[in-house]
Length: 498
Image (cartoon, rainbow, N blue to C red):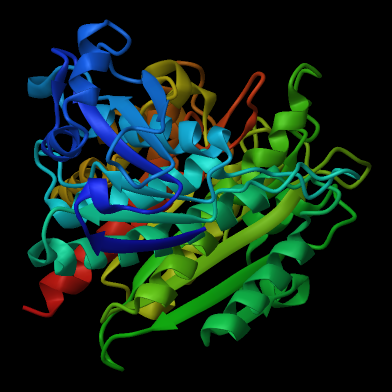
């Protein structure tokens, strides 16, 4: 999809489609008013007849509108004007793009980015428009023998009333395009079947990303992890024939000695639960257990394109979790890279085992902050559903940064407690810590487990078990939290440049 901005009166657009907003009171937006004047009241006549009431998500395509050069005019319902927030604005963009695509138009001018949206300036609205449009048109058919017919919609113009708005709109478009590319990469990786997207495949994708965007890349093999004493990570890999990898991907945009932000992504490319075998129902969705890893790759892809002035390191511990004669058993005790011993009470609590060694490995970079991203616990889904990611942090200012980034990107998280009171549930009579703490507060105890390995730096944990993919008819990876992470990093870069 090709995106651009342009200042042009809607009635002068000679392309395939012009999309204009209508509020629920049947009030035309400013751009729609302009076109209606040129059309001698044709739009008002449509509204007067009741053919369009402006309810959010409704659309109506008009053909051969008098005195208008565009082949089609699309009216898009915006809902109540006073309630036009980020959610409604994004829904209007999604419905507009979907409707245009269904008409067969090759191009469209969207006169929606200049609508006033609470807490979002023009650059932000342009960014969201590009991100949502890309998401609405996304398809994954790589594994089908017969591909879906190519969409005719090729060009989308974020249309403006005046040239004065071009600079912020272009800035938002650029950010939206990069974030959308990162989200699409994350979705592609998540949607691939586990017999294709193995740890070795993820490692090759990281190398390819490094070649394309001139990033630094290193892949640690099993023998490297053995030398480092990563007993927790390696314990998860014991039952699989696929060798584990630890991917180290580096973007250097800041000063050479500037401390980096480290992103750590859980990369379990398929999770059977190991000896603590999962139920068969919906086990196919455990291919999505590497979405944390995919989101780190997607974020590095977006950051490499936007080139902010900061240093970012992506660490991805990746393995399968399979049953087998060599697999870890409940009751086994392993020694992590930090030297702490862990009693494995449930082999399906494997994500925290691979993450804890990666978090210890992160110490060598003397990071400014570390954020890990993981489809970690079903308990987080019970707590927050599929709307917000769970957020934990050992530094409140870091948590506040991530929360603000999530609100700005409409990729929201919710701050949950990380109190040491919950450590009681992780006590083991045989080792330093158990890998599970029982059913109560399962997401919190998982975060408390990880916190034991993060004393050397500011750290945050994003539990994306409820937000990384959707189930049902439209099953698939969402690409979250790439927008949150990219926005967080861009804000960090902006702060450091002041």
